[in-house]
Length: 161
Ligand SMILES: [Zn+2]
Image (cartoon, rainbow, N blue to C red; front, top):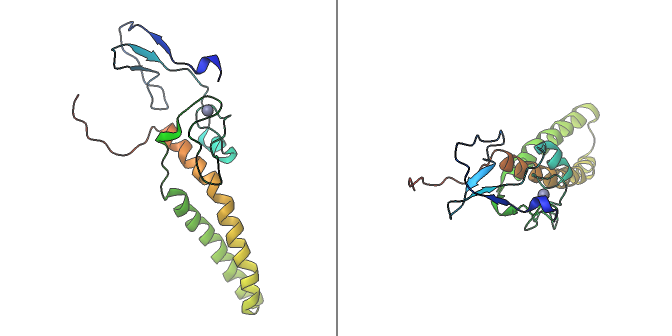
């Protein structure tokens, strides 16, 4: 873990802090009333983090520990991936995108060549598998990166505390 990954605690200097464009304040108040300054990381494009399946904060650590299982934390900057919950999102986009592409191709082949049915089975079953499985990982990584980028999480009640 690099030295910069440790949160630097400083006494409250007073004044207000503007939020970063990413939506997360760079300074947050801790339980003890102290200010914890979070280490600064150069912005990582969610698209780049998604395509490379890397950490949405530092862009270096691995995001997955299995095919679709998230690692508990980034092995480079230590970001806890506990916030990440993409739910059914990646599967929905895979169904919509892969379905659109494969069904359109199947229609085109049928209308153009009128092949026997087994040709369709041979063509499209492997295509669907390859396209779906190939898209799941980067799409999940992209959605986790978008979730981090926009600081999105489940709805919570604001109890005014
Ligand atoms: Zn990281």
